[in-house]
Image (cartoon, rainbow, N blue to C red; front, side):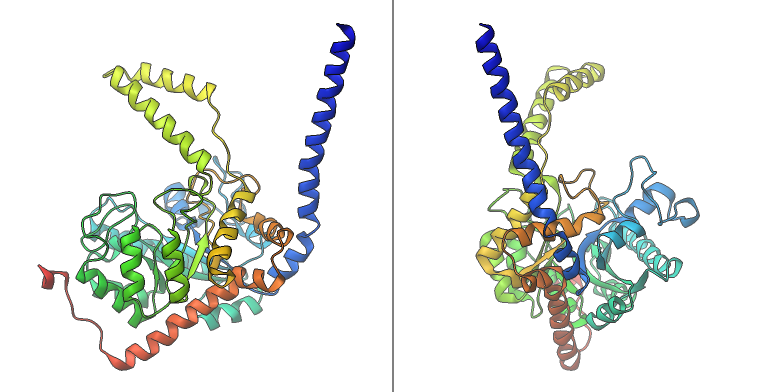
Length: 425
């Protein structure tokens, strides 16, 4: 019996040593590529397609810089994912700041709140001029990057912010917005949203006119948050390259916010870009299934205990104590990049972290300082330096220039659209 116990202990120690060594070796292998990844990111502006710092400042301090210095947000509870030192450490060269407001407020109010978000971005670049400068064109991005600053671009997250008005769309462009996500979490009068009940089988006629007017302005069409039917309609209508500011591959994780393979192929034909995101339930199917099981259990508990919130709370606390959520990982994010590359090539891939718009992040990508680790992982997987320059920034610069060229042509061909949504009623 004693001999058997000794053998068991030796076996356990051996296996622990073996698997611990494998994990350590994987980290060591990636770290061997880190210096090369840093050199690549120092040579080209690293675009992040989506960051919700403006929303964080709204919710935490009502946009007041004197209450929250952007040089350090780590001391907050909970900490933010983004601040100036960590942006610098992560070698971010061009940041699309999301100017998001809730899709569930009245649309006229959304117009005002979106203007407040845009005002925050303008004040951010004035408050910290050594680090940020507003960028309106691809040439701006390259110039600002060469000057050692972070090019700051404005992306509107949701067509509810234009309140069914092309005039409002044009004014937001004049205020600096250079992409608009067609929907957020709610189906609009003119476009179907992922996660909500579809009503239009994609875009309505007015929705198609929104796309055409965005093309004329030079505002990028962002198809994250829309249904596949809306994606297909928008790509069909758009004369300019489209983008997905923060979405992953549906083939790997069957989340409605991810992009189907046929739409990935359409995006390549259009010359667009899919900016792979770090949202955990878009990244890991295991995590998505876990939260589906949790939601189902909660519905059961609520059904069995109507009017007993304390019982429901206790039951869910017990369930959470017994069931640990699986974490997504940096490697799984890289798997989504692999899938898109294998299907349509590296020319159509970017990065859209969604930092400060989500509560949790994949292991290895906990804040904006970690971008070099992801690029080191891709180097370890055999991506070339030119591949990574494209993923980091060259693809997004190409998309921006494509939209600018289409805009220049269309502005010479036609006047601003005078179409109103009521014209289709």
